[in-house]
Length: 430
Image 1: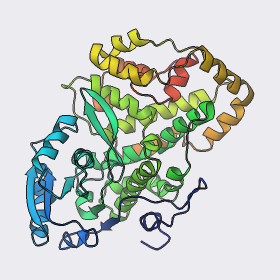
Image 2 (image 1 turned 90 degrees about the vertical axis):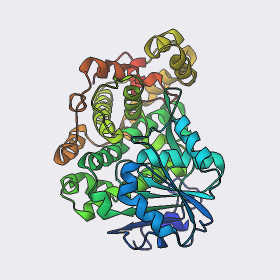
Image 3 (image 1 turned 60 degrees about the horizontal axis):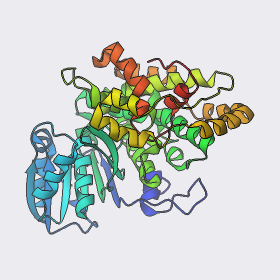
Image 4 (image 1 turned 180 degrees about the vertical axis):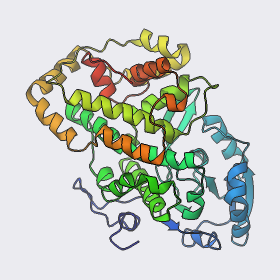
Protein backbone atom coordinates (compact mmCIF):
# COMPACT_ATOMS: atom_id res chain seq x y z
CA UNK A 1 0.00 0.00 0.00
CA UNK A 2 1.15 3.58 -0.67
CA UNK A 3 0.70 6.62 1.54
CA UNK A 4 -2.24 7.62 -0.67
CA UNK A 5 -4.01 4.30 -0.19
CA UNK A 6 -7.38 4.92 1.48
CA UNK A 7 -6.87 2.06 3.97
CA UNK A 8 -3.47 3.47 4.95
CA UNK A 9 -4.90 6.95 5.34
CA UNK A 10 -7.85 5.76 7.41
CA UNK A 11 -5.54 3.93 9.81
CA UNK A 12 -3.35 7.02 10.06
CA UNK A 13 -6.33 9.34 10.54
CA UNK A 14 -5.43 11.47 7.51
CA UNK A 15 -8.26 10.66 5.07
CA UNK A 16 -10.19 13.89 4.35
CA UNK A 17 -13.91 13.71 5.07
CA UNK A 18 -15.85 14.33 1.83
CA UNK A 19 -18.79 15.43 3.98
CA UNK A 20 -16.76 18.35 5.33
CA UNK A 21 -15.91 17.14 8.81
CA UNK A 22 -12.48 16.46 10.34
CA UNK A 23 -10.24 13.77 8.87
CA UNK A 24 -11.81 10.33 9.05
CA UNK A 25 -10.66 8.00 11.81
CA UNK A 26 -11.31 4.35 12.57
CA UNK A 27 -10.65 2.36 15.72
CA UNK A 28 -8.88 -0.48 13.89
CA UNK A 29 -5.13 0.10 14.23
CA UNK A 30 -3.61 -2.38 11.79
CA UNK A 31 -4.49 -4.13 8.55
CA UNK A 32 -2.26 -6.75 6.96
CA UNK A 33 -3.11 -8.05 3.48
CA UNK A 34 -0.37 -10.35 2.22
CA UNK A 35 0.12 -13.14 -0.34
CA UNK A 36 0.81 -15.36 2.67
CA UNK A 37 0.96 -14.96 6.44
CA UNK A 38 2.93 -18.17 6.95
CA UNK A 39 5.75 -17.39 9.37
CA UNK A 40 4.32 -13.93 10.12
CA UNK A 41 1.33 -14.88 12.25
CA UNK A 42 2.94 -13.64 15.46
CA UNK A 43 4.36 -10.40 14.03
CA UNK A 44 0.87 -9.34 12.94
CA UNK A 45 0.25 -8.41 16.57
CA UNK A 46 3.32 -6.18 16.83
CA UNK A 47 2.43 -2.70 18.02
CA UNK A 48 -1.06 -3.61 19.21
CA UNK A 49 -0.27 -4.12 22.92
CA UNK A 50 -2.28 -7.32 22.90
CA UNK A 51 -0.67 -9.68 25.39
CA UNK A 52 -1.24 -11.53 28.66
CA UNK A 53 -3.81 -14.28 28.16
CA UNK A 54 -5.29 -14.56 24.67
CA UNK A 55 -8.23 -16.77 23.76
CA UNK A 56 -8.10 -18.03 20.17
CA UNK A 57 -11.67 -18.64 19.00
CA UNK A 58 -12.34 -20.84 15.98
CA UNK A 59 -14.57 -23.66 14.80
CA UNK A 60 -13.41 -27.13 13.66
CA UNK A 61 -12.90 -26.00 10.06
CA UNK A 62 -11.10 -22.73 10.74
CA UNK A 63 -9.06 -24.31 13.54
CA UNK A 64 -7.65 -26.84 11.09
CA UNK A 65 -7.16 -24.17 8.42
CA UNK A 66 -5.38 -21.52 10.48
CA UNK A 67 -6.33 -21.68 14.14
CA UNK A 68 -3.89 -24.35 15.27
CA UNK A 69 -0.87 -22.68 13.69
CA UNK A 70 -1.90 -19.29 15.07
CA UNK A 71 -2.14 -20.80 18.54
CA UNK A 72 1.36 -22.21 18.16
CA UNK A 73 2.71 -18.93 16.77
CA UNK A 74 1.25 -16.83 19.59
CA UNK A 75 2.44 -19.17 22.37
CA UNK A 76 5.73 -17.30 22.63
CA UNK A 77 3.94 -13.97 23.09
CA UNK A 78 1.06 -14.80 25.41
CA UNK A 79 -0.63 -17.52 27.38
CA UNK A 80 -2.96 -19.04 24.80
CA UNK A 81 -6.40 -20.47 25.48
CA UNK A 82 -7.92 -22.50 22.64
CA UNK A 83 -11.68 -22.26 22.25
CA UNK A 84 -12.99 -24.37 19.37
CA UNK A 85 -16.73 -23.92 18.94
CA UNK A 86 -18.96 -26.76 17.73
CA UNK A 87 -19.52 -27.27 14.01
CA UNK A 88 -21.51 -24.55 12.25
CA UNK A 89 -21.92 -22.11 15.16
CA UNK A 90 -24.76 -19.61 14.98
CA UNK A 91 -24.31 -15.86 15.37
CA UNK A 92 -26.86 -15.50 18.12
CA UNK A 93 -26.97 -13.90 21.53
CA UNK A 94 -26.73 -17.22 23.37
CA UNK A 95 -23.52 -18.31 21.59
CA UNK A 96 -21.94 -14.93 22.14
CA UNK A 97 -22.71 -15.13 25.85
CA UNK A 98 -21.16 -18.61 26.01
CA UNK A 99 -17.98 -17.26 24.41
CA UNK A 100 -17.84 -14.39 26.88
CA UNK A 101 -18.24 -16.79 29.80
CA UNK A 102 -15.68 -19.29 28.50
CA UNK A 103 -13.07 -16.54 27.94
CA UNK A 104 -13.74 -14.37 31.00
CA UNK A 105 -10.16 -14.83 32.23
CA UNK A 106 -8.65 -13.80 28.88
CA UNK A 107 -7.23 -10.32 28.31
CA UNK A 108 -8.24 -10.36 24.66
CA UNK A 109 -9.67 -12.57 21.92
CA UNK A 110 -8.21 -13.73 18.62
CA UNK A 111 -10.95 -14.65 16.14
CA UNK A 112 -10.02 -17.12 13.40
CA UNK A 113 -12.77 -17.33 10.84
CA UNK A 114 -15.10 -15.20 8.77
CA UNK A 115 -18.61 -13.80 9.27
CA UNK A 116 -20.02 -15.87 12.12
CA UNK A 117 -16.84 -16.17 14.22
CA UNK A 118 -16.02 -12.50 13.70
CA UNK A 119 -19.51 -11.29 14.65
CA UNK A 120 -19.60 -13.48 17.74
CA UNK A 121 -16.20 -12.27 18.94
CA UNK A 122 -16.80 -8.59 18.24
CA UNK A 123 -20.13 -8.74 20.07
CA UNK A 124 -18.77 -10.76 23.01
CA UNK A 125 -15.70 -8.56 23.49
CA UNK A 126 -17.69 -5.33 23.21
CA UNK A 127 -19.86 -6.46 26.09
CA UNK A 128 -16.86 -7.58 28.14
CA UNK A 129 -14.75 -4.49 27.41
CA UNK A 130 -11.90 -6.50 25.88
CA UNK A 131 -9.96 -6.02 22.63
CA UNK A 132 -9.87 -8.53 19.82
CA UNK A 133 -8.19 -9.16 16.48
CA UNK A 134 -9.24 -11.34 13.58
CA UNK A 135 -7.39 -13.60 11.17
CA UNK A 136 -9.79 -13.95 8.25
CA UNK A 137 -10.26 -17.30 6.57
CA UNK A 138 -12.67 -16.40 3.76
CA UNK A 139 -13.57 -13.28 1.74
CA UNK A 140 -17.25 -13.98 2.34
CA UNK A 141 -18.62 -10.75 3.85
CA UNK A 142 -17.89 -7.09 4.56
CA UNK A 143 -18.13 -7.16 8.34
CA UNK A 144 -14.52 -7.73 9.38
CA UNK A 145 -13.89 -4.12 10.48
CA UNK A 146 -17.44 -2.90 11.08
CA UNK A 147 -18.65 -1.77 14.50
CA UNK A 148 -21.90 -3.72 14.29
CA UNK A 149 -22.65 -7.43 14.43
CA UNK A 150 -25.50 -9.37 12.83
CA UNK A 151 -26.83 -11.20 15.89
CA UNK A 152 -30.08 -13.14 16.20
CA UNK A 153 -32.00 -12.30 19.39
CA UNK A 154 -35.02 -14.51 20.17
CA UNK A 155 -35.37 -15.31 16.47
CA UNK A 156 -35.17 -11.64 15.36
CA UNK A 157 -32.05 -10.95 13.30
CA UNK A 158 -30.66 -7.58 14.31
CA UNK A 159 -27.68 -5.36 13.56
CA UNK A 160 -26.34 -4.68 17.05
CA UNK A 161 -23.66 -2.33 18.31
CA UNK A 162 -20.35 -4.12 18.79
CA UNK A 163 -16.73 -3.09 18.23
CA UNK A 164 -14.18 -3.17 15.45
CA UNK A 165 -11.07 -5.36 15.80
CA UNK A 166 -7.77 -3.79 16.74
CA UNK A 167 -6.28 -5.61 13.77
CA UNK A 168 -7.41 -7.64 10.78
CA UNK A 169 -4.98 -10.01 9.05
CA UNK A 170 -5.73 -11.54 5.67
CA UNK A 171 -3.72 -14.22 3.88
CA UNK A 172 -4.62 -13.93 0.18
CA UNK A 173 -3.53 -17.51 -0.49
CA UNK A 174 -5.87 -18.82 2.19
CA UNK A 175 -8.72 -16.62 0.98
CA UNK A 176 -8.23 -17.63 -2.67
CA UNK A 177 -8.42 -21.30 -1.66
CA UNK A 178 -11.69 -20.81 0.22
CA UNK A 179 -14.69 -22.72 -1.12
CA UNK A 180 -15.89 -21.03 -4.33
CA UNK A 181 -19.29 -20.34 -2.79
CA UNK A 182 -17.65 -18.30 -0.03
CA UNK A 183 -15.77 -16.23 -2.60
CA UNK A 184 -18.98 -15.64 -4.53
CA UNK A 185 -20.59 -14.73 -1.22
CA UNK A 186 -18.09 -11.93 -0.71
CA UNK A 187 -18.72 -10.69 -4.22
CA UNK A 188 -22.46 -10.71 -3.52
CA UNK A 189 -22.01 -8.78 -0.28
CA UNK A 190 -19.95 -6.13 -2.09
CA UNK A 191 -22.57 -5.80 -4.83
CA UNK A 192 -25.14 -4.10 -2.62
CA UNK A 193 -23.29 -0.80 -2.36
CA UNK A 194 -25.49 0.51 -5.16
CA UNK A 195 -28.87 -0.53 -3.74
CA UNK A 196 -27.98 0.36 -0.14
CA UNK A 197 -26.81 3.81 -1.15
CA UNK A 198 -29.96 4.39 -3.22
CA UNK A 199 -32.22 3.36 -0.32
CA UNK A 200 -30.30 5.47 2.19
CA UNK A 201 -30.29 8.48 -0.13
CA UNK A 202 -34.03 8.12 -0.76
CA UNK A 203 -34.76 8.28 2.99
CA UNK A 204 -32.51 11.33 3.28
CA UNK A 205 -34.19 13.15 0.40
CA UNK A 206 -37.71 12.37 1.63
CA UNK A 207 -37.25 12.87 5.38
CA UNK A 208 -33.97 14.80 5.83
CA UNK A 209 -32.59 11.83 7.77
CA UNK A 210 -28.78 11.63 8.16
CA UNK A 211 -26.77 10.56 5.12
CA UNK A 212 -23.06 10.57 4.31
CA UNK A 213 -20.95 10.36 1.17
CA UNK A 214 -17.80 9.12 2.92
CA UNK A 215 -18.59 5.36 2.87
CA UNK A 216 -19.10 5.43 -0.88
CA UNK A 217 -16.18 7.68 -1.81
CA UNK A 218 -13.92 5.17 -0.05
CA UNK A 219 -15.07 2.47 -2.47
CA UNK A 220 -14.83 4.50 -5.65
CA UNK A 221 -11.42 3.27 -6.85
CA UNK A 222 -11.83 -0.44 -6.14
CA UNK A 223 -15.44 -1.20 -7.04
CA UNK A 224 -15.29 -0.96 -10.84
CA UNK A 225 -12.16 -3.13 -11.33
CA UNK A 226 -13.66 -5.77 -9.05
CA UNK A 227 -17.05 -5.87 -10.75
CA UNK A 228 -15.69 -5.80 -14.30
CA UNK A 229 -13.26 -8.68 -13.68
CA UNK A 230 -15.29 -10.84 -11.32
CA UNK A 231 -14.46 -13.99 -13.28
CA UNK A 232 -10.80 -13.67 -12.25
CA UNK A 233 -11.79 -14.31 -8.63
CA UNK A 234 -12.80 -17.83 -9.51
CA UNK A 235 -9.45 -18.57 -11.17
CA UNK A 236 -7.47 -18.00 -7.98
CA UNK A 237 -6.10 -14.67 -9.21
CA UNK A 238 -4.47 -12.99 -6.17
CA UNK A 239 -4.72 -9.39 -7.49
CA UNK A 240 -8.44 -9.97 -8.06
CA UNK A 241 -8.73 -11.41 -4.56
CA UNK A 242 -6.97 -8.35 -3.16
CA UNK A 243 -9.51 -6.10 -4.90
CA UNK A 244 -12.34 -8.08 -3.33
CA UNK A 245 -10.71 -7.94 0.10
CA UNK A 246 -10.12 -4.19 -0.17
CA UNK A 247 -13.72 -3.59 -1.23
CA UNK A 248 -15.03 -5.63 1.69
CA UNK A 249 -12.76 -3.87 4.18
CA UNK A 250 -13.56 -0.39 2.86
CA UNK A 251 -17.27 -1.17 3.01
CA UNK A 252 -16.84 -2.24 6.62
CA UNK A 253 -14.84 0.89 7.42
CA UNK A 254 -17.67 2.94 5.91
CA UNK A 255 -20.13 1.48 8.40
CA UNK A 256 -17.64 2.02 11.23
CA UNK A 257 -17.27 5.68 10.28
CA UNK A 258 -21.04 6.14 10.26
CA UNK A 259 -21.55 4.15 13.44
CA UNK A 260 -24.24 2.01 11.84
CA UNK A 261 -24.79 -0.47 9.01
CA UNK A 262 -26.87 2.03 6.99
CA UNK A 263 -24.31 2.39 4.15
CA UNK A 264 -24.22 -1.36 3.48
CA UNK A 265 -27.52 -2.81 4.68
CA UNK A 266 -30.87 -1.65 3.42
CA UNK A 267 -33.76 -3.24 1.49
CA UNK A 268 -31.67 -6.07 0.07
CA UNK A 269 -30.61 -7.10 3.56
CA UNK A 270 -34.17 -6.90 4.87
CA UNK A 271 -35.27 -9.44 2.24
CA UNK A 272 -32.35 -11.68 3.20
CA UNK A 273 -33.19 -11.33 6.91
CA UNK A 274 -36.80 -12.32 6.20
CA UNK A 275 -35.64 -15.58 4.65
CA UNK A 276 -33.30 -16.20 7.59
CA UNK A 277 -36.15 -15.66 10.03
CA UNK A 278 -39.00 -17.47 8.28
CA UNK A 279 -37.43 -19.76 5.69
CA UNK A 280 -37.64 -23.53 5.91
CA UNK A 281 -34.52 -25.04 7.54
CA UNK A 282 -34.86 -27.95 5.12
CA UNK A 283 -34.03 -25.70 2.15
CA UNK A 284 -30.44 -25.83 0.88
CA UNK A 285 -28.18 -23.72 3.12
CA UNK A 286 -26.93 -20.46 1.60
CA UNK A 287 -24.19 -18.07 2.62
CA UNK A 288 -25.24 -14.56 3.56
CA UNK A 289 -23.53 -12.99 0.55
CA UNK A 290 -25.15 -15.48 -1.83
CA UNK A 291 -28.50 -14.31 -0.53
CA UNK A 292 -27.46 -10.67 -0.87
CA UNK A 293 -26.46 -11.27 -4.50
CA UNK A 294 -30.01 -12.37 -5.29
CA UNK A 295 -31.78 -9.76 -3.16
CA UNK A 296 -29.58 -6.97 -4.54
CA UNK A 297 -30.70 -7.77 -8.08
CA UNK A 298 -34.32 -7.67 -6.88
CA UNK A 299 -33.81 -4.28 -5.25
CA UNK A 300 -31.90 -2.89 -8.24
CA UNK A 301 -34.77 -3.79 -10.57
CA UNK A 302 -37.35 -2.36 -8.17
CA UNK A 303 -35.41 0.89 -7.82
CA UNK A 304 -35.05 1.25 -11.59
CA UNK A 305 -38.77 0.61 -12.06
CA UNK A 306 -39.78 3.27 -9.54
CA UNK A 307 -37.29 5.83 -10.84
CA UNK A 308 -38.85 5.55 -14.30
CA UNK A 309 -42.24 6.59 -12.93
CA UNK A 310 -43.69 10.09 -12.92
CA UNK A 311 -44.01 11.77 -9.52
CA UNK A 312 -45.54 9.13 -7.21
CA UNK A 313 -47.93 9.93 -4.39
CA UNK A 314 -47.91 8.08 -1.09
CA UNK A 315 -50.69 7.25 1.31
CA UNK A 316 -50.89 6.35 4.97
CA UNK A 317 -49.18 3.00 5.47
CA UNK A 318 -51.72 0.19 5.43
CA UNK A 319 -49.58 -2.12 7.58
CA UNK A 320 -50.53 -2.13 11.25
CA UNK A 321 -49.52 -4.17 14.29
CA UNK A 322 -52.03 -6.90 13.48
CA UNK A 323 -50.55 -7.25 9.99
CA UNK A 324 -47.00 -7.54 11.34
CA UNK A 325 -48.07 -10.17 13.88
CA UNK A 326 -49.90 -12.10 11.18
CA UNK A 327 -46.72 -12.27 9.10
CA UNK A 328 -44.20 -13.01 11.87
CA UNK A 329 -46.20 -14.57 14.70
CA UNK A 330 -46.97 -13.18 18.13
CA UNK A 331 -43.57 -12.75 19.80
CA UNK A 332 -41.44 -12.01 16.74
CA UNK A 333 -44.19 -9.82 15.30
CA UNK A 334 -44.34 -7.58 18.36
CA UNK A 335 -40.56 -7.18 18.27
CA UNK A 336 -40.66 -6.22 14.59
CA UNK A 337 -43.60 -3.86 15.14
CA UNK A 338 -41.61 -1.83 17.66
CA UNK A 339 -39.05 -1.11 14.93
CA UNK A 340 -41.43 -0.75 12.01
CA UNK A 341 -43.82 1.61 13.82
CA UNK A 342 -41.07 4.22 14.04
CA UNK A 343 -40.96 4.68 10.25
CA UNK A 344 -44.60 3.94 9.40
CA UNK A 345 -46.21 6.75 7.44
CA UNK A 346 -49.17 8.34 9.19
CA UNK A 347 -51.38 10.95 7.50
CA UNK A 348 -49.19 13.88 8.54
CA UNK A 349 -45.94 12.33 7.32
CA UNK A 350 -47.56 11.14 4.09
CA UNK A 351 -48.76 14.67 3.38
CA UNK A 352 -45.26 16.05 3.95
CA UNK A 353 -43.71 13.44 1.63
CA UNK A 354 -46.26 14.18 -1.09
CA UNK A 355 -45.48 17.87 -0.94
CA UNK A 356 -41.81 17.08 -1.38
CA UNK A 357 -42.48 14.66 -4.25
CA UNK A 358 -44.73 17.15 -6.04
CA UNK A 359 -42.10 19.88 -6.05
CA UNK A 360 -38.90 17.87 -6.31
CA UNK A 361 -39.37 14.37 -7.78
CA UNK A 362 -37.19 15.09 -10.82
CA UNK A 363 -34.36 16.28 -8.56
CA UNK A 364 -34.77 13.32 -6.19
CA UNK A 365 -34.83 10.88 -9.07
CA UNK A 366 -31.80 12.49 -10.72
CA UNK A 367 -29.70 12.36 -7.54
CA UNK A 368 -30.42 8.67 -7.03
CA UNK A 369 -29.91 7.73 -10.68
CA UNK A 370 -26.40 9.21 -10.55
CA UNK A 371 -25.22 6.78 -7.90
CA UNK A 372 -26.78 3.46 -8.95
CA UNK A 373 -25.46 0.74 -11.22
CA UNK A 374 -27.85 -0.79 -13.78
CA UNK A 375 -29.32 -4.12 -12.73
CA UNK A 376 -28.06 -5.63 -15.99
CA UNK A 377 -24.51 -4.60 -15.04
CA UNK A 378 -24.84 -6.24 -11.63
CA UNK A 379 -26.34 -9.35 -13.19
CA UNK A 380 -23.36 -9.70 -15.55
CA UNK A 381 -20.94 -9.34 -12.65
CA UNK A 382 -22.57 -12.27 -10.87
CA UNK A 383 -22.95 -14.32 -14.03
CA UNK A 384 -19.23 -14.07 -14.84
CA UNK A 385 -18.41 -15.43 -11.39
CA UNK A 386 -21.03 -18.19 -11.55
CA UNK A 387 -22.81 -16.70 -8.55
CA UNK A 388 -26.52 -17.22 -7.75
CA UNK A 389 -28.81 -14.65 -9.32
CA UNK A 390 -32.34 -15.87 -8.64
CA UNK A 391 -34.34 -17.25 -5.73
CA UNK A 392 -34.54 -20.52 -7.62
CA UNK A 393 -30.71 -20.69 -7.65
CA UNK A 394 -30.85 -20.70 -3.84
CA UNK A 395 -33.65 -23.26 -3.63
CA UNK A 396 -36.20 -20.72 -2.39
CA UNK A 397 -39.78 -21.33 -3.60
CA UNK A 398 -41.09 -18.51 -5.77
CA UNK A 399 -44.19 -17.93 -3.64
CA UNK A 400 -42.11 -17.61 -0.48
CA UNK A 401 -39.68 -15.19 -2.10
CA UNK A 402 -42.55 -13.02 -3.32
CA UNK A 403 -43.82 -12.94 0.27
CA UNK A 404 -40.34 -12.01 1.50
CA UNK A 405 -40.04 -9.12 -0.95
CA UNK A 406 -43.50 -7.86 0.00
CA UNK A 407 -43.09 -8.08 3.79
CA UNK A 408 -39.37 -7.66 4.51
CA UNK A 409 -39.88 -3.94 5.08
CA UNK A 410 -41.81 -4.78 8.27
CA UNK A 411 -38.66 -6.00 10.03
CA UNK A 412 -36.75 -2.81 10.74
CA UNK A 413 -36.89 0.95 11.09
CA UNK A 414 -35.21 1.75 7.76
CA UNK A 415 -37.23 3.44 5.05
CA UNK A 416 -36.28 1.89 1.70
CA UNK A 417 -37.66 1.56 -1.81
CA UNK A 418 -39.63 -1.41 -0.45
CA UNK A 419 -41.59 1.02 1.74
CA UNK A 420 -41.81 3.61 -1.02
CA UNK A 421 -43.32 1.06 -3.39
CA UNK A 422 -45.85 -0.11 -0.80
CA UNK A 423 -46.78 3.41 0.26
CA UNK A 424 -47.30 4.55 -3.34
CA UNK A 425 -49.32 1.51 -4.40
CA UNK A 426 -46.72 0.05 -6.77
CA UNK A 427 -46.42 -3.69 -7.22
CA UNK A 428 -43.35 -5.17 -5.55
CA UNK A 429 -42.26 -8.11 -7.69
CA UNK A 430 -39.25 -10.39 -7.08
